[in-house]
Length: 447
Ligand SMILES: Nc1ncnc2c1ncn2[C@@H]1O[C@H](COP(=O)(O)OP(=O)(O)OP(=O)(O)O)[C@@H](O)[C@H]1O
Image 1 (cartoon, rainbow, N blue to C red):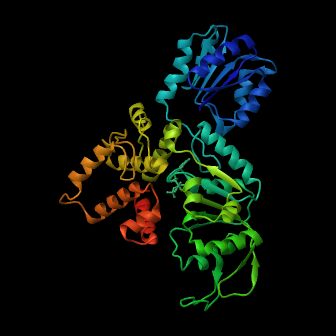
Image 2: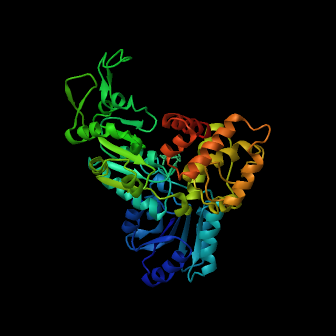
């Protein structure tokens, strides 16, 4: 939620205006002196600063003087009892500076806060260098990331596909004092035969094809963070080896005899729910408790739709930078992005904007969205009937590529088994590894 800072020593005025601002969908902080305002500004970024000119300890300008460069609000309004202030503010003002004369009318506040919000590009912060979003759910997540990063606790991140689990692992690593690197492995994509050697390393000659000594991922992540994505897809017979390393902090390479000390935080991730992990026997209970010392649940995007404008703006900014373009998002586009449920979460949003970016007319600078939002991985925006009829009409249409058909088949199968990749691979008659390879290919071609 965007924030407003109200700096005024007139307590009656602050307590009358704050609820009005809150009703307009903002969080409000109130400061009654310069030092308090500065301390709020050091901690938060504000959409609007409402500033009384005359304050204990100085003036509203003293608050502005101390504004951190990266915390410039979208708009500053001086609040005064004297209309004579107008000429002064007009003289000083930039396009985002204005004034309000007491008593303030609701309409004036709405014009100031809401009109600006509609027309200005959303501004966003990258929390821990990577995560965008200011919804209460994301704020709570940042709080937990900040706390757990100060410890060495292992973290299990759960959430639907595309909610940002990998990014959260990066955020935890960034926020920690780790000296070593972040090393990532996708447990579902490594074959059962190779996973031991990938994680723990091997000595030369340990098995056919082991032509040289290879350190494992645990060793490479020493003093850093090991990210085990899709940890619940790790073959069950490999899990005791993992447990041993987690318990002892020692690793023995395959074919080796020496125990090596390894010290790293293990952050793991899964799309599976707690019930599915337990009932499906995907993770041994003892491993679960070692990995999930600190469990984190990522909210789906449909439950934090106020993050959509910020995320969308961040993706458009990235593309504009990469292609030296100047596309903007208008209110109509934002409204239609916010009206969709994004079953594929942030990844699907990003993909849709990328597609829109490619399709848009570069001379117009305004992005045009595809007529239908969503991807083959989307599950809820269209009704089942709509999906079935569109499927049946296009299933065997001449001109569809085999690759597109394969992608659709994989998407539909995953949908039918509620995202369970093992079951989907079985139904499709391919190995889990092949399924992951395909999904990774699609991911790469979308990003
Ligand atoms: N809060 C966020 N801020 C910015 N980008 C985000 C955020 N969350 C997700 N993304 C972007 O969305 C895409 C998917 O994120 P990520 O790969 O971390 O999801 P995931 O939950 O690990 O998905 P999967 O379970 O399918 O592996 C990436 O392009 C990532 O950069």
